[in-house]
Image (cartoon, rainbow over all chains, first blue to last red; front, side, top):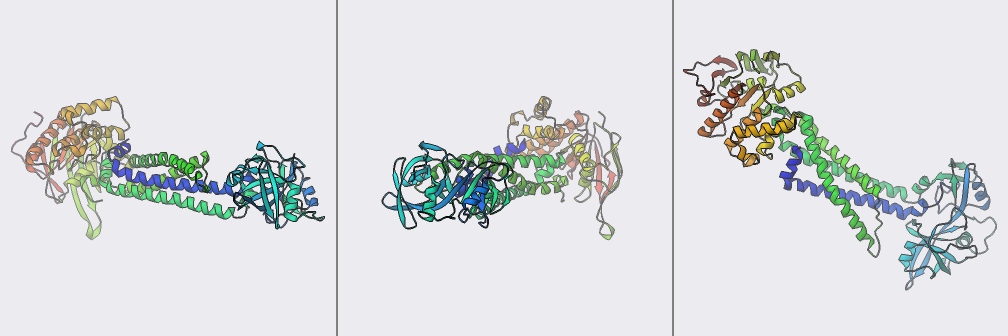
Length: 367
Length: 235
């Protein structure tokens, strides 16, 4: 294991590349964490829906904002072949006031109690059918507004302001970068379309569907899987493309830097490689020592950067305006494996150089 | 094991046509185990090229090299590497130890690349270090060793895998004459004492005189050099 012995005896030389690998691993981890965090902000509430598929109105382009479903369409959506359960859900963004008159917006989702659209309550109680001005507010909403269960909050929409009582706390996440607030679907319809809606007024934005093989185009609506629905949230595909591009640039830069370092190291060791070949070492043995160094340095870099990213995550969550960053075990594992792979790929740059070294140079002759 | 080297009509030509360079021309010689040959000659005479061909670092253009009756002049790349690991021990001009390894680790490297790590290898390394007076320097990194110590480690490394032939390239080039003499004495003693065949390339006649036989290369051709006496280097 002479590769490892060299790292041990030439600490300073390898500490430099170790530092660079650590910073690259940290950067890629932060980018991936940002990707996960942004996705959570964009639509964790959608991912938390207790549904296999979602129905949108025809022509809405899978936009929850544009989708409007009338009673007849909702009825047909609830009778699709293979359906186990369904629930209409309304969406509207509205402002609320809190503190000393500060204004913020939230995603208001209208549902029917007792259906699959009902969220789990973590504190307080669920909405009853007569809770016309009751709310179930997400933890982030309560934290942002410094409110708690039992408080009232003024909601503004269509030039009206109505006082709502927070009857329960939920942990459903965000929608369109806003915390979600659940209310009764009748109240939602009133908020969005005004009091005493005329006949034919949409009764929902989407329908949550449970069942198998529901995806398809139907009369007046289309059904897509939850993952397709997520990807079609406004801005998500562009955001994911940006984060993915940044992530790949991180891996590419990692591979190039690690590859360049070991390529230069290989050039510096040409005579040494020639001597090793002259005494019978195979090119594979010599390359494997370099590869072992790359893997070791990358593992050390990850061993430092992973906890560092965890600490950074914690610190960022302590800010008054938390940065949308989130880490999961999957983020750490995927990033670590990908970076190890990129580093090994970078080390391959040196393989050809190792193979080309003629052992005759050990005798002081030119190749 | 008796190592008999038979080199027949060996030639090495670089390039072709008008630009052809005949580094070695039609060289023939034989030698038995337990003897030490020196090849002398001016720079560019072809002596190192000859050494490289015998040690499977170069393939001859023509001719045959037989070791113990086995033709080693037309081996594949993998066979050449195996031959260099097991059949040949090298002592290079500037010792060429791995600089960040200790003396002991440089010896054990020979076992590692042969896939023969184990107690036997460690014992052999200790024995060689002891015989070459290097036990106290066994844990010194190569860069901490003196020139003479480095060459003695290089000799020990060459003997580590018990090769049949030890090939030595200008072993005293970076040493003063007194240290050079000590190194060659060690070489001749260790190689002959183990019944190996030693072949040394040098342009230092004083060192050549310490071996059994002197072959002279000039313009790629070899001639036997007459000597007044042959010292008993193994004594």
